[in-house]
Image 1: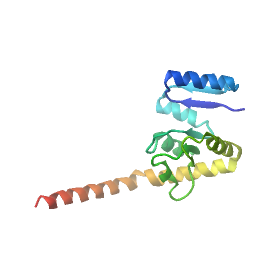
Image 2: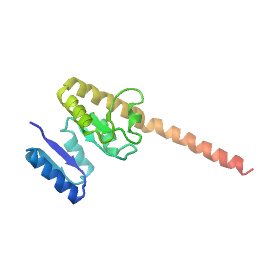
Image 3: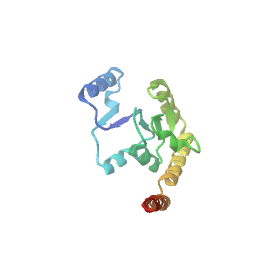
Image 4: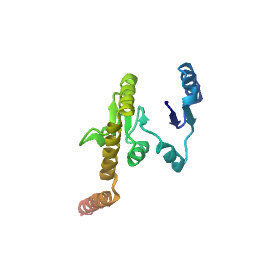
Length: 158
């Protein structure tokens, strides 16, 4: 059986429309609608999920994506902003063109029906996340950048 958790805030007119559509398709009882949740509560729900879907139209790289990947949860998202940078080395996030609901649905279905692909994608996402957001690697890079800026400023004042 299908169950869907929708975490986040929506304008009431959109929420009304979405709930109406869910009822029209017989999915009203399959969907849990929540507002924004404390991180611990959101993680507890995400830990039970099989796929994270983030069809956002504007995004740099979402905390939702980063947290999902740390939880080894495969992600399907619209190819907007810099989300594609996660896929720099290999296909980790299942990206679809913005607004392509049919393709979004196909990617979700693929991950839900292919357990090995879902597991492998989760593992790869976790490893890529560690690579991209490992503080022991990021901090030295930031310090080098600050040193360059400071040395440039001190040289330009001479």
